[in-house]
Structure formats: C-alpha cells, structure tokens
Length: 361
Ligand SMILES: NC(=O)c1ccc[n+]([C@@H]2O[C@H](COP(=O)([O-])OP(=O)(O)OC[C@H]3O[C@@H](n4cnc5c(N)ncnc54)[C@H](O)[C@@H]3O)[C@@H](O)[C@H]2O)c1
Image 1 (tube, rainbow, N blue to C red):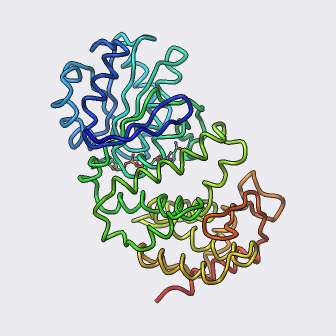
Image 2: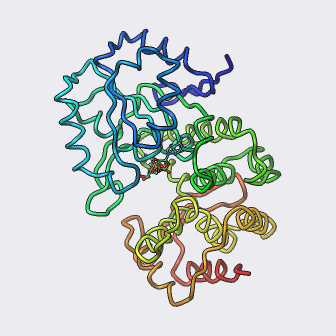
C-alpha cells in the first residue's frame, strides 16, 4: 500500500489512493463506535465518494449519514442549526466524530459544526475536490458565511486527521478541477524550489499524475500553516493572487449569470499581482512573462471593460488590511520568493487591470 504522511499542526495528512486499511485502523485505534460516527456529505460526494468508502470500510456501513445540498449557498448558520439538531437527535456526544466527506463547503461547514457542538467534538476531513485537497481541507480554518459575507463566522480548529484520496477527483467536473489547479499554480509560484520549474513544463490538460502534484502542493500549504497556525502574518504569503482574485470573484458573482469560479478569479489575480510585483517588487520581466504565458495557456480570459475597474477597486478598498488608499498585497520578488504586506497605490493596481485587459486576443 503506497501512502505518504504529511505532519501538520498536531495531526497527520495521509495521502494515497488505497487508504482504506489506514482509515479502518485509525477508527479502530480510537475505538469509535458506529453509533458515534457521523458522516457529512453533499449529494455529489454521497453519490460519487461515499459508496467507495462504505464498500471498503465495513464499520462505515452502519453509521449515520448527514447530507447537505451542494454549493456555497448552504454554508450558513441555518444549515449549522439543522446539523446541530440532527447530531443531538442522533445522540452525538463528546465521544463522537464527524467525518467531512466533500469539498471545501463540506469541510468548512462540517468543521465548524463539529468544533462548536457541545464545545467541540472531533472531526476528520476526507476532501473530495482538488481545491479541498490542496487548500480548504487542511489548515484548520472552519466557518460559514453570514448575509453573503464569506467566512464571516468561524474558528481555528484542526481536524483529528485528514485522509486524502487523490482518485476522488476522477468524478469531479473539469471546471472544478481547474479551480483547484489555480491554487496549485500559486503554491508553485510562492515557494522556493523546483516546483515552478516542474509544473511549468506541464499543461493542465496534459496532467495525468495528480497524486504527486497534490502531495507537493499539500506540503507547501502545510509549510505556511504550521509556521503560522493562527494566520497572524507569515501565512499571508498564501494570499498571493487573492486580493485582486477576490475582487473579480465578488464582482463576477454580483454581475454574471455564469460567474467566475474561485480558481478562475485567482488566475486573474495571479496575472495582475505578478504585474504589480514586476513594477513594485522587482519581479524580473522574464518571470512576469513566464507567469503570464502559463496562466493564459491554462485559464480562459475574462473579458473586462475599463468602465468596470472602479467597481473592482472599490471591492479591494473595502479590505481592513489596507492603509488608506493603498491596497495590501503579497508580492513576488522572484518566482519562489515573496513579500507580505506590500502596499500598492490605486494607479498601479489600475495599471495591472489594464495589463490584464490588454491580454485579450
Ligand atoms: N478553510 C479554508 O482554508 C478554505 C480555503 C479555500 C477555500 N475554502 C472554501 O472552500 C469552498 C470551496 O470549496 P470547493 O471548491 O471544494 O467547492 P464545493 O465544496 O462547493 O465543491 C464543488 C462541487 O464539486 C462537487 N463535488 C465534490 N466532490 C466531488 C467529487 N468527488 N465528484 C464530483 N463532484 C464532487 C460538490 O458537490 C460541488 O458541487 C468555499 O466555501 C471556500 O470559502 C476554505
């Protein structure tokens, strides 16, 4: 059985496609009884992933399954209330464990529900989307949205363990895989080493071995979260591409019928923030060109008009981390080297939007 183990803040992330024996032993070791194990899914992880777990781990055939609808729309307190009630009715107590089987919505919501139920019960993540494997399912940030504000309510609370089966992405729609890929590109850009050199030889469409890519991507995210578990500074490196990316995501959610996915928005952010890095933090022009070439090869262009820039800037200016009219960024000084808390002024940010716009063919 081929598996790797990444050690995080007091818990392990097991990676491998055949982790069933490991999961079985883990549940056995902690003496979890079937009536104390709860599995949270959405309809897709229930359909595509749960049967594989159940057919390989007998103990899971008898446990209580809880299901939420898929999508960000359910990541709120109303769903938490429903799940807290369901756990109460089913007799969950502090000996119970909640297994979050799903994407980032399931792990954010389920992690929060578990961490607050009876002052906290244990939870396990089994991420089933690429994004949750390399990002949402590790790192201990759990929570829900409030009145449309993302992740407004939440806590830091680590899972007991993460079991990551890369094969689960086989049933994921291509667009969802690509959204996770944007975070992988970001990881390769911020972290020193050979990752960018390796990744930039592969196109999204040519990747067949996701397992190895997932593994190094997890190691990179894990490096930052173990150095800065409570997100007080160093972890901000992971924000590269996200200041402008979030603005596009929010803007697109408000205006487009088929809105940008998180990863598609981050891909735009990677280009714009690399441009700002070149102008403000001396990222060499050759590296900017490399990044732009790679991102435009792998992600569709989002057409924007100059008349939309002010709305995007307004969204960015809303952020508490800014200093007056200067916007807070994580920037690259070179590929693999980044600086947090860099403040770019509005004209430069606008210039980066013009730069992105000019890439339209
Ligand atoms: N906590 C963190 O550190 C962190 C980091 C990044 C993102 N997030 C959060 O993660 C969420 C986004 O996560 P996501 O991109 O995984 O989205 P998601 O959980 O909404 O899943 C995307 C879609 O894929 C489906 N799906 C899941 N697994 C599948 C499978 N194996 N086969 C087929 N379909 C499957 C889901 O049902 C859903 O329709 C957001 O709420 C975001 O805020 C959290």
